[in-house]
Image 1 (tube, one colour):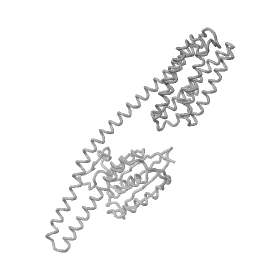
Image 2 (cartoon, rainbow, N blue to C red):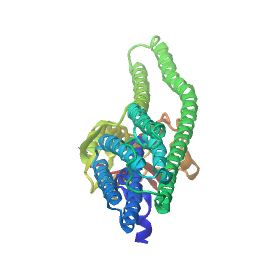
Image 3 (cartoon, helix red, strand yellow):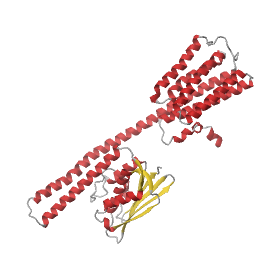
Image 4 (cartoon, rainbow, N blue to C red):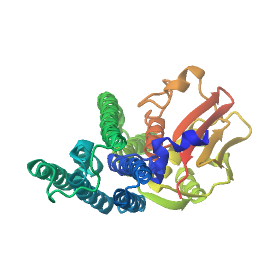
Length: 428
C-alpha cells in the first residue's frame, strides 16, 4: 500500500498539501515538480545505461542532469518557483542542444525540445507569459540551429558513435511521458474551468431568482408600515390630547421601529453579499455579551435565562458577520419563546470537533412545525401568517455561514423548542 502511495504523482511534491485552496498557479507549480521527478527518472535510466556501456563521458553528463534537476526541484519546493523554472528550462535546453550535437542524430535527443517548448507554456503563470514565449522560442531556435548545421554545430565531435537502442527508447518514452503529462494537465484545467463556469451559472441564476423575490417582498414590507403610519397620523389629526392619541403615537413608534429593523436586515444582507471576509481574533463570550445587551429590551427578553457552555472561546472570524449571525438566532429564540412555561431559557454552547467549532443555540420555546423546517432558511419565508418577522433573519444566517465556510442544521419539536447547530472551520 505504501508503494502505491509513493508512485502517485500527487505524492511527489509537498506542494500538493496546499491543495485545500487550489488555484491554477499552484497547480502549475505542482506540475513543475512532477515534471522534474519524471526528468530525474529519465536521467537515472540514461545514467545506468551509460554506466553499463562503460561510457564515462556520457554518464558524467547524465550525472550533471541529475544534479541540476535535483537543485531545481528543491528550489521549486522551497517556493522559488519562477527562478527554478527559468533555470531549469534554460539549462535543459542547452544541455539537450549539446547532447544532440555530440551524440548520433539517430538517438533522437532533439525530440526533447518539443515537450520543453510545450511545457514552457504550462508551468509559468498566466502573468508570466513572456517567460513562456522566450523559453519556447529558445527551444525552437536551438532545434533550428541543429537542423541547419546537420546536427554538427561543433564540428564532427562525437562522444558516442552509432545508435544505442536503449538510449533511443528512453528518449522516445521520456518525451512521450512529458507530453502526456502536459496534455493531462490541460484536460484538468479545462474540467476545472467548466466546473467553475457551471458554479457561476448556478450562482447567477440563484442571485437573479432571489433578486426578483427580494424586490417584490421588500417593496411590500417597506410599504406596509409606511401606509400604517400614514393612516395613524391621519387619525391623530382629529384626536385631542389624551390616552387615544398616546396610543396612536406608540403605534407609530412601533411601526417605525419595525421599519428600521427591516432596513437593518436589508443592510446586513447587502453587506454580507458584497464585502470580503475581515478575519480577526476575538472572544465568543464577548460577542454574546454584546448581542445580549442589544436584545435586552425586546419583549419578553427579561424573563429568559441565557445559559452558556462555551468550551471554545478564542476564535478567528469575521466579527461583524458573527455578530449578525448570533443576533438573528438569539432574537428569534426570544421572539418565539413560550410565555406559558414557568421557566424560559436559551442555551448557547460551543465545542471543538476536529478542526471545526460546533456551536448550538437551543431554546425551550414554541418550536417549529415539521413541514416548515426545510424552508426556514429561504428568503422571506414565514413559518406562519401570524409571524411578525420579515422572513429575512434565518436567510441572512444561512448566507452568512456560507460566506464564513460553515453550515447550519435545525432540529425542532412543536411545543418543546428548537436547536440550531452550526459548524464553523476553526482558523488560527
